[in-house]
Length: 104
Length: 166
Image 1 (cartoon, rainbow over the protein chains, first blue to last red):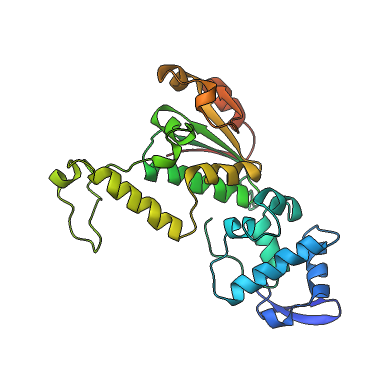
Image 2 (tube, each protein chain N blue to C red):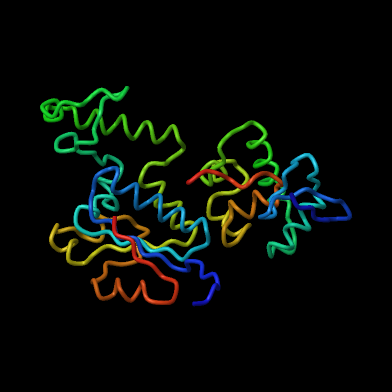
């Protein structure tokens, strides 16, 4: 297991950079990971989506891009804009949860 | 030989058959590619066009006759004669769609919207459109074009690009 320092806090991450202890997550940590992923500033919508992801994952739900599109915080198009490139992978990394294992 | 990693940059997926499983194989791969940030194009031809034909897209069927993989729930063999009974194919197909919905796999129209929302592009084969006497209005509004085979290959051109035929 690797460690990284974000916002002055040491965080446990796996070899791909996903946080292994979700409880270490803070908004400040998220902002720093986001910068590494090429997102300069997290808006309220970003945070709403991140909280939604954390909520779903803590409930044990399989995370899909479709569920995020129906979350009420953004639609799928908006989700791609918020986290450009590979949105689900980026968003879960920034949300401090494991890499998603869903295919949709 | 270089060890340099060359991730896939572009993918063109050809869907030529219209059964639930053939269409969804293409859609799942396309959506998965879009989600990975890969430039994605879908080319629908022959019976695959059903997947982008407004009137047919959400009521695709699976074959209950001539499908040796077909089993009843619980893995009991599915007799070939049963597949031919009136209404069975529709019932089996509707059950399959319901099971996919439970896994959060959307209906075809919504799946295509997810793909285009992420920047994926949808094309129809000109030859097949002409052959089935389809009009532009019969196909989904989000269509990027009705194109020839030559144009399809142009779309797939470039480094780290792959064509997948389902």
